[in-house]
Length: 316
Ligand code: ADP
Ligand code: MG
Image (cartoon, rainbow, N blue to C red; front, side, top):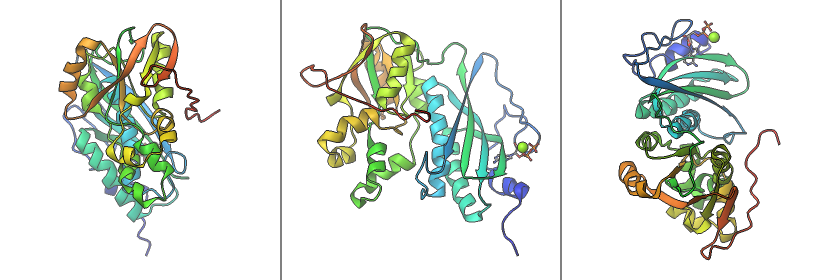
């Protein structure tokens, strides 16, 4: 007897009851479309990200980690807008309906969905190469979303958490000593609470998915300013600091991807307030916004460091 569920049994079994039904979602999974009822005074932030096996995660990644990460990268975009997680859809392309894979995937996805308070309200399930597309919708009070375009000369540039763990983990996939970096690669922790706390404080924000240098450049371009960043100020975790080789440090922290931390620009006088609101998550001032366009990394003496970054680009 074939124990593989058909498409509709699969949706019922793994996804229909994944998350509690919120009051402002009159109709979730099961009809031709979900119905959402946003409150007055709220703007909706909408974002989509696709994860492809072998490109966005190593082929051997555990299904629970794939489920977690597919949602995490999307929640990170909501965090960068200062939006509160609300609902999401899941478009799943699967080579086969393997119950063990689906159980793991739904467990990882559900764990982060419940932790972040986001509800699964629909999706699509097809057969094909393994690919996961999630669309998230977040809520933000009208006019309060964080954008890339508001950075001002004199702002401090800050990052949450630490940089480089995931990129170093990817480089050391087969090194048992690097095992403690793997959760940072496979289970990134999107910073939605920090994003919400930074509304009204940060002048500009972005999440770090493709590496600090490439992502911060988007903020600088959108804001028409430059930045000077202290390479020695980039925060590393204890595991990263213990394992990284000196010559790969800046390349991994500024050119590596998959950090899913927030990078934001804020007036110097507001840094302490932001720090208190984000605690226990650490905030680090890494540099300043300057008038002269471009991004420069400097060492402890203020000397410009050569840095040839290659931001990840799908269509180089
Ligand atoms: P339709 O044929 O009308 O497009 P489907 O048969 O694709 O509808 O889906 C039936 C219901 O199940 C819809 O409400 C859809 O949103 C939901 N659904 C399908 N796949 C998923 C999934 N992977 N996760 C969550 N909901 C899903
Ligand atoms: Mg459909």
